[in-house]
Length: 286
Image 1 (cartoon, rainbow, N blue to C red):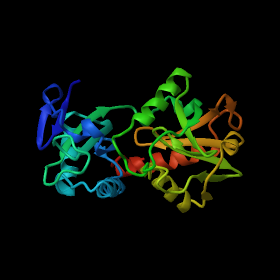
Image 2: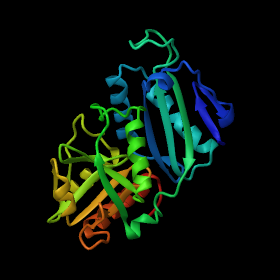
Image 3: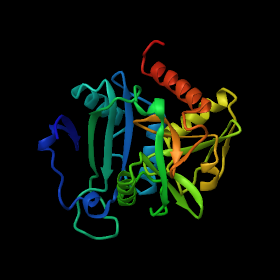
Image 4: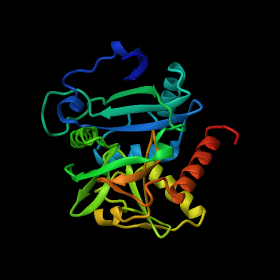
């Protein structure tokens, strides 16, 4: 590990940053995280990112480690220190260090860590040819709307995805697709974008929020409703979204081609409009 990271108010070389073995994030997974994409040295989608982070903190009765303004300045400083023109920043807040007891300890400072990474987001090789996904049982806990660091369920699913030579796993509960292991999921039927409505069953994806807003502005029909695996297999198109992929086309589910097996027109339109919006917010002239 290299680069400069943030740990509880200090900027340190990655190999010098240490957290106590008594940290509740390590013992219980008692904490939350966020990932913000970076384009042109700019952290994107700041307002929805702060809203979701604030909500996750409130749901777990966690306090902000600093003001929101200082938090954003910390992110900007990490981007600059690590020379991140394109990539992302991962940040994590845990309840802090205390002796092992299930109940929340009182009056202890949270542990706040963050690191930046480089990644090609816009010029993604998967955009042209799409990705293959598989469906798996959704084995996660029941508060998936909280961006919890307790991700062992997703790790188990991602391992199966890797072993079976796919890109992502679409998780299924009671016959309905919830979301991807690390992405929001969408299908398209008769030019209508369909995605599961927000609830405790899925994470409120920031890209999901923005894509639905873009669709509304451009008169692209959307439906927020449950959809089955069978519907997904018979969709005209399918795609997914996440912080560091933006929008990617799904061309195959469980070995079955979706549509003609190529990225579809609705996906292409949505990605184009999302990229245009992103570049504009990053200060890049189109």
